[in-house]
Amino acid sequence: MDTEYHLIVTPEVTNTGSDRSQLANIASQAKAVLGVDHLDAVANRGYFNSTEILAYEQAGITVTLPKPMTSGQSQMAASASTTSCRRRMSTAVPRASS
Image (tube, rainbow, N blue to C red; front, side):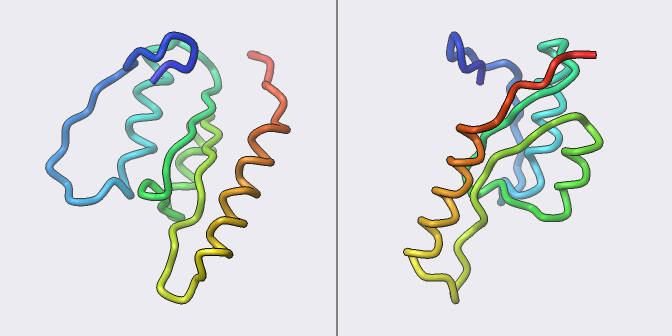
């Protein structure tokens, strides 16, 4: 979704039961539709997939999302993780196109 006008940039329908492996694909499509060299994507923890992190980097996509809560993680730790992500996001400097 475009953050300025709140328009859907590229739709994707899937019958996969989880969003975990969907973000790199849809973010790459959005980057192509927008015609930009670099894309900043923000997603909820349902999209977290540590094996896709390299795909984001190689595609020129910076992703901000919290780590998923695991059975051993307390709510307080999860909140701290999300706060840390927000802090990093708010201090991010836009990259110039090359």
